[in-house]
Image 1 (cartoon, rainbow, N blue to C red):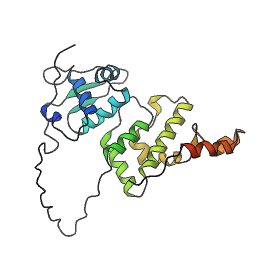
Image 2 (image 1 turned 60 degrees about the horizontal axis):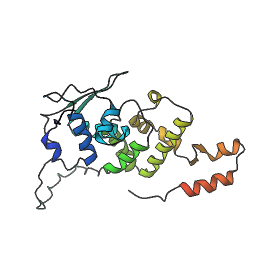
Image 3 (image 1 turned 180 degrees about the vertical axis):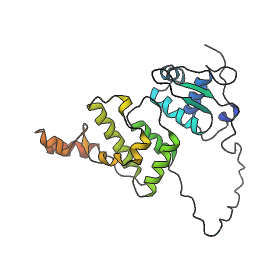
Length: 231
């Protein structure tokens, strides 16, 4: 194994990256040529080298692409092609001053930008969603999540719906390539189909139709549903 990992120094100083995401970038950097390209290492190998799961590697790659540190080219039937962006412009001020600057005046007639949903909630949604051959498009997912949350949808509702969709795919042995992309699942409103209470991947009505005890369904459902939280 090479004794060097080629990554941009600004990634080390990027306070928006988590240690896990940085480890994934370092794992990719182990395999680059001197210009940051030529990486076709499998997700399984990267996961082993970074000490994380394959799903975490895919999620981290989405963030790294968004931050401008990585380019991923999907190759159907083969491993993805990765290129570490060594000369891309930085995504943020690396050494922000501790002094509190006065907020700039907003021109009259403009609409203030709504706050974005915190990254940890979006990551939780991605982890709950059934796996696909390629990692989710993080910017597109974030856009749809922000739109739904700002329209009044609770973030926990989306995570639960994703978990139920994952259970549905597991029960029906759905192939990864037939799993809908997460941002389209959100944008097309498919998530609402799974915004229902389920136990072991089935609704109360499905329990009733199969002759199972609906009281047992209610008991299990009450024990597994976490308390609602406001984001």
